Length: 344
Image 1 (cartoon, one colour):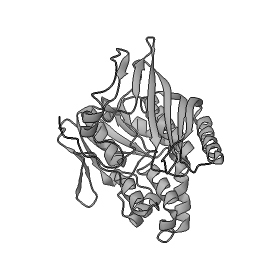
Image 2 (cartoon, rainbow, N blue to C red):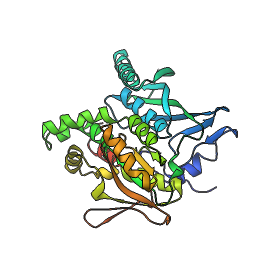
Image 3 (cartoon, rainbow, N blue to C red):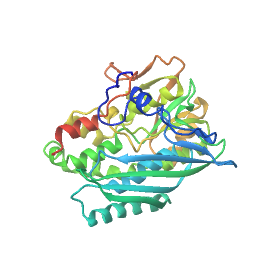
């Protein structure tokens, strides 16, 4: 028997997934166009007509506040990255032992608000008080439909494609840190910055970003950079596409609130959970049209790099002349900070 690969908090790394998960995927089904694979955002299932079903599941484990809306946004984001329209969600709420019915109601009000905003229906789920659980966890499965031949994957990027980033890095991370570590940050950061950062939660959905990009054409791949932040997202896109990637910190959008909060806590914005941004691989000749479409829709975006044929080159060139190596998936800085500062 081979030895068990080590892993830390957050997503399991590729070697752990290959050892403990991917060998055990049940029955074969020819209708599965895209199934479990490193870096891929959602399953794609052939509906045997002119459509495919897109399915993705995600838990909210790092945050404490606003779990309901985060669960809706994060799960539907990964459906949208396939070029599909999210339509339905199924929800599981694992309640901590000391939870109240009022907490359930509050979470469901958040779910309801986010789902109505996106035009998504809640079709089922499960709610329980879970023995031994110290914090409530919400998990969500989102479903959407796309036309056959009109969807993209994480691994569809091609050498020479340009790489577009929308909105900025560490949007979700900024909101979580500003809320969950407010007591620590209140001594280090101006209160107006903290209040502004908390409102980043409203920007976590990338459904609109993906719709606009797909309509402009030339998009070959999209990815939602979650754990590991932008660095993790770039690693996953390059890995899934079997390509190299080079990005430039000088072109990456880092909003002032993100920079201030990460500096105050000693985090790297490029390696902090990044829901709210969308990574788009696009044919070079179509990049300006996609950028124009995003900006006309009120979505800030920039070209931050390109994909390379040489898969040995996976890196972000820092503004100070150093290199952030993306040969291995990074550990998210959010987990390090929560472990260091969050009260038990």
